[in-house]
Length: 158
Image 1 (cartoon, rainbow, N blue to C red):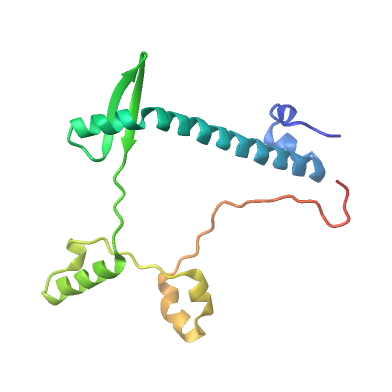
Image 2 (cartoon, one colour):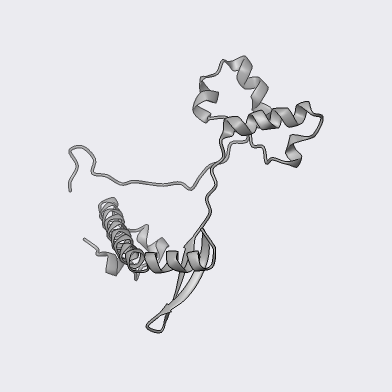
């Protein structure tokens, strides 16, 4: 039995668990391809919209004395909202130096900065046990959303 994506839409999730692994693999493959095509099409349409309205939005921001932010205008009865968000990027080394100077002057750096500490899991796993024990109380392991990829087994049927 082979099932199409359109037919699968009529099944509940629990009903789909009764499908064969081959059918589920094929549906997953088709759904991923359909999603990729939809994303490509959306990117293409969004690119055309940006090309059409980018200059107009930039000119309106300039008239309003804005380098970034949201502007609105109309085109043929359609309200166009153009947003150019700010996206600051902070030099982490320089911020650490500034935090050090703030602490040296007797002030609390956390009053001025949001300070985040991270440990790469790959590094943590490579540390010697005695060092990991020092950090272990500060570590909580959470899991992400489980994913399953179905592929054809070696020597298996298509």
